[in-house]
Length: 262
Image 1: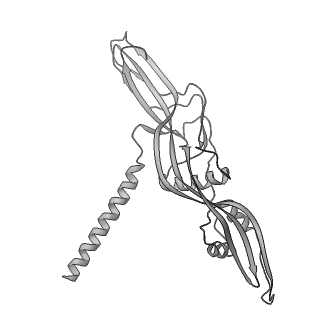
Image 2 (image 1 turned 90 degrees about the horizontal axis):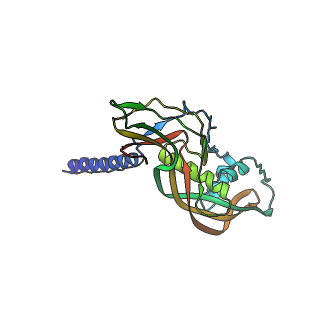
Image 3 (image 1 turned 120 degrees about the vertical axis):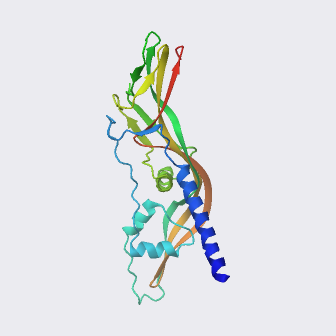
């Protein structure tokens, strides 16, 4: 009986985990209307990977000593570049060094995709006088720059953007950038059929991720007590923030036919 109950519990936990995983995957399932233009884009977008620095042994020790989670890559970089070697015989040695006011971490609470964030192109063709279907394909008529950004003014905005894009990339597995360009003349070979006596319209949209969450701020101090060293964070505050982050080198397409010009 105990064995049967244990097996049932494992099955329940597995189903729960599987359902959560499927739900997370389904949330960012890319629609069939979204196409990868990375090989066709006439404007070569630079890769916007934000480096996730691995903390050194000293940095890891200091970060773990703080009572607040520290994820800011710039603060971690500064600590990685620091050297602290207090003497073990420095009895009575004391020092408190102010390292500044920092955005310490970002906690994501909601990540959603808008596959039609910004319309960037319209191709159209008139087949109202035709007797057979005609075909049309996508061609970018003019260069378009798509920019995202934070939804409100906030201290240490650039640091916050770095932490937000790291979390959004982890959750979506999509190439994200706050600034991306689709070049003039970018083409795809996907064919759309326009029946006789109709006009065809092919709309291209730049998708983006809407990221929402909370930033934790605080004043960071390096405290030395003899051979011991630690970080102390004071005057901790929290602030809600959101951001739109475009998806790089991806376009969403919408195709319609009409009797009349639109």
